[in-house]
Amino acid sequence: MKDVRTGSEGQCQRKRVFIRTYGCQMNVYDSDRMADVLRPLGYALADTPEQADLVVLNTCHIREHASEKVYSELGRLRDAKAERRAEGGDLTIAVAGCVAQAEGEEIVKRQPAVDIVVGPQAYHRLPELLAEAARKSALLRAGKRLPGAGVLDTEFPAESKFDHLPSPQGVRAGSAFLSIQEGCDKFCTFCVVPYTRGAEYSRPVSAVLAEARQLVEAGAIELTLLGQNVNAYHGEAPDGSTWSLARLIRELAEIEGVARLRYTTSHPRDMDDDLIRAHGDVPQLMPYLHLPVQSGSDRILEAMNRRHGRDLFLGIVDRLRGVRPDLALSSDFIVGFPGESDADFDDTMRLIDQVGFASAFSFKYSRRPGTPGAALQDQVPESVKSARLAALQALLGRQAREFNTSKVGATVPVLFAEAGRKPGQIIGKTPWLQSVYAEGNPRLIGRIVDVRLIEGHPNSLAGEIVTGPYEVAA
Ligand code: SAH
Ligand code: SF4
Ligand code: F3S
Image (tube, rainbow, N blue to C red):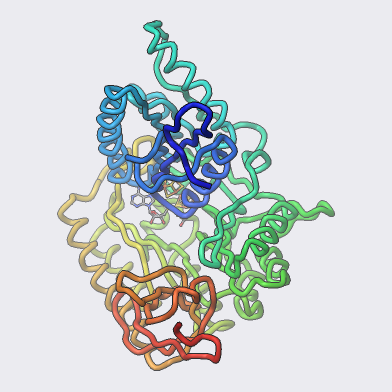
């Protein structure tokens, strides 16, 4: 159907929404859900903010830099809105996600052009919020004085948003995210997530299985289970028992058509024996695990309230490699947590050396208002953080390159996900979540194809498709 934005009377008038996603995969999943909620209201997806009647910023609060980006984007949107209004049109601006939850009303105070602030637990209420915003805007335009601008919903409603959101529509190129757990009760002293996403909550088993089946019917062959603490999953099963993540994974692997399973993000404390065993005996569970450790120093891990020491992490790595020797490990690191000495940092470098990571994310500690870490004495100077981050990233970069080059020469199954930048090129993922680019027909996107790896780089590999009878480039 052709979209008609400003059609003459009698024509069907469609609206467009542009959603910009910051932060983690939970936000990517939520952005899709918001698109699903808005679709029945007549909103099609726009590719740019310029084409949109409604712009939603799905924000991240994890580090200061992430939050500040939102305000600069809001400044640009305010200007766009003013231009639209001068031309007799309008632009509705909504802020969703973790900044919305953390800052609430402050956002409208700082940027009055914002129409809606909606926290991550209230997305199913978007239709009401939009109607309310439209009503307010009409009153303001009619010259009425209102007690405050903006429409706000940052409640943690008693009912789960999952029960009220429509079923997911989006399967991209054979791969889909499935949110199974949300929130966090761990309260690491650096982290805002327990405040922005609320208490830990696991979706019931039946809801997860039903969504998984729908996704598979819609073309998914890879499911990535999501949660802020996904391996703390403890969902209620129909018979009243509680299922762990391992139990759930075993059941999902039984669904016909599920070729690959992944989960993220996990916490070392919740790597139970059964989950470790599943890495050895569930063939669909990919040999890749993102297991954030943050630091290799027991003293710092304790100050971070991570509730485990260095040995627990190293022990888990050994056990995982015992059942799945080719497991690729990835992690998150924070440098410059308050009180981190050179010796503590060396402990982190030694841990990295000992484990050998296939990939990693690393950050300078960012002081987040309201978290216990922000109040600690002994904050580390910025220059020290920068030097430590550079050293850490150099080591992790070397390890990533070594890991990638170690696979050169192998023929591995690659799930192709998108077209590459160069014409004729397609990009996909190996079981170890490495990006591979190869010459290939876009018809292969969404399929798993054998690829011979020919060149290893720090962040990707080049490969050649091992051509089967029906995979001849057209
Ligand atoms: N639940 C996951 C992490 C979620 S946040 C876990 O427990 O591991 C993603 C990553 O952001 C964290 O692993 C951490 O490395 C980083 N991070 C969180 N808060 C931060 C802060 N205040 N400063 C710097 N990095 C931070
Ligand atoms: Fe944040 Fe810690 Fe919870 Fe992870 S476990 S989300 S780092 S508080
Ligand atoms: Fe950011 Fe919220 Fe995810 S703070 S990392 S978007 S849970």
